[in-house]
Length: 213
Image (tube, rainbow, N blue to C red; front, top):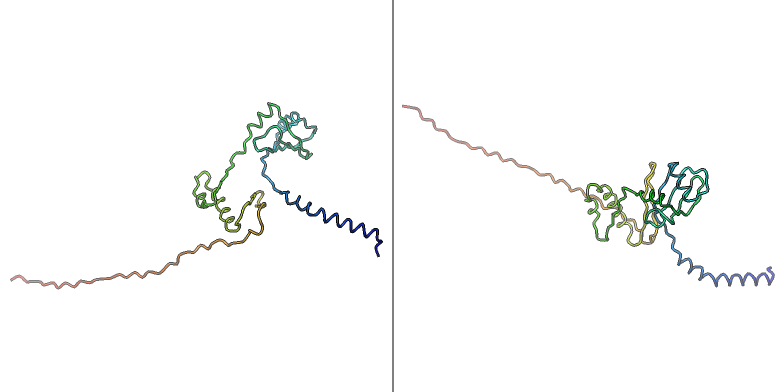
């Protein structure tokens, strides 16, 4: 049987825990876990790595590659972060005019962004200009699938294909609004056999021959 003092301590601890539980739950409700896609540049050139390492005051001797992350989304520059490999250390960068000029020349290149309003038809993107029509077709397929299977907002998705593997990650959605709906069946019109009737009309003409006298 538990000692009365020990038992009283358990009761007090339990009371304190239940007192703070609403506060803890309230704090959890105020925390939203999300993720963002950040533009990055990987530098493999040894001369550039040495230049950036010196400029960013990185005290590492052996750097195989350097990855610079554009945290603010306004281009690479002051306040962004560089990470070394294989060291894996992070450094907040303050570039000089020389290195800033180099980073200003970096552009993502080839990126295409489609935006669809709630009433826009997926066919609209399948009929995009030829230069982006293939990308429009991919977006149209994603749009159809999302509208069939999810009836709410927000919804975030990241799709990646690399080394023969295609992966998709979904987050930020309400699970209770996810309802699988199969794609509509493509009904092929039935071919109704048509009987073609050919009417042959034979005209009989009686010919009268007269013999000369």
